[in-house]
Length: 298
Ligand code: NAD
Image (cartoon, rainbow, N blue to C red):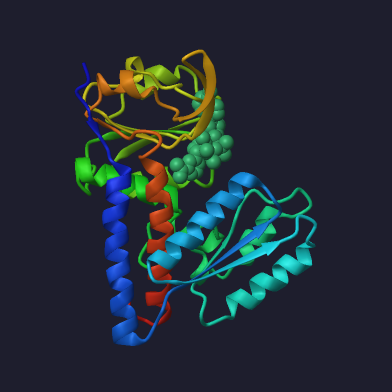
């Protein structure tokens, strides 16, 4: 019997998108400023093509100026850096995003660090990472996925997580580490687990908040969950399932949703949980970049 609330990321993202669209209209009407997002994609990776298309469409639906630069897979590093340089000094562009992963011959760190920290709406620049980890978040860009997770956690537990234990499974720069920094900033007592953590189920069982960002389908089961915990499933895994004798492909998270729901207070589904929030937070960061560029936010 399921007790947990289903955390509806899709509905929350839609609500937030409406606010972003309204604020964009106000920004244009009151200050003659339109947020601009440039997305750079290099190569033909089909999943990346879908993500980039969705980002562009969403930016337009929020009322942003949106441009996409599609470069051939064999584009040189110099040419990519030159394009980023142009976008860094383009006044119509407030947010720049280079879709990852990059082709092997390109250096991800050099490229992500060449984006101006003030236009780094993915939050991958060392300046923004430094601001986040030192708790100076007034003008920092927070990586979109953990920022979205945090809003969903706040909905269920409030903004002050004092006295609560949080366990983040995964220590990537994109999800795990910034997630841990945000939870710490909100006063949770945070443990970060990874592939070398012994007795992972035992550690997770202590947690009032669990964020799973691993990439292993259904790894976290209800048996690992403390009764009443809030569970955020970041994982996106494609698995094969048998339906009426046919093999079909299905998206699933890192958490076994049904069994987790039997114990937890609230759980994000996959799909429909963290994913829709991630793209919405990209729009949030772009609007914020535009406002900051005009000195409208501190
Ligand atoms: P990553 O591969 O960079 O990191 C995975 C982490 O999991 C590593 O730190 C690793 O130590 C840890 N790990 C691996 N095996 C483990 C195990 N057996 N026990 C404990 N920890 C283990 O991945 P990532 O970029 O952080 O993404 C994680 C998952 O989240 C992936 O499924 C990815 O597709 C998904 N993701 C979703 C969104 C979204 O918007 N929903 C955004 C980013 C990533």
